[in-house]
Amino acid sequence: QLQASGGGLVQPGGSLRLSCAASGRTFSSASMAWFRQRPGKEREFVVSVTWTGNITYYADSVKGRFTISSDNAKKTVYLQMNSLKPEDTAVYYCAAARPKTTYYRLYASMGFYDYWGQGTLVTVSS
Image (cartoon, rainbow, N blue to C red):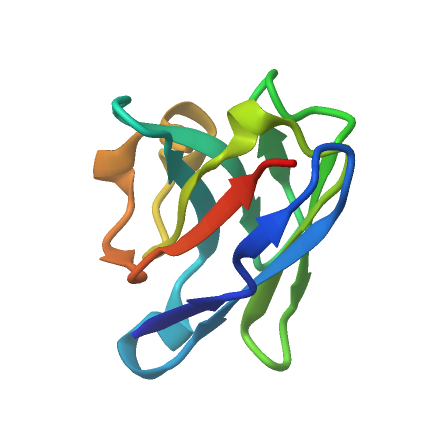
């Protein structure tokens, strides 16, 4: 299971940190990611990271503002979101994938991930 938390209401320019803890079968995952679904839009890739090697990929829209980090011992990933904009308003989902050699090609694809968390709402508004 993946348990996401940390969402809430924040003003533009503010910061928020999301957490996603892996447990059960997801504990043996090789990589994790955050996706988001903005109102009226399809779910989109935000960022991904591998548990070993800490290989990360970011969507262009969040580069320089969002930072993913991981605590391997706790099997928890964090998404630090700074300089938030109204267009960052979305439900944020964490996802986990079993070990696969295709990470480098498919990290941004929803189909690559085997497990999904329940989503946490982030609202950026004044």
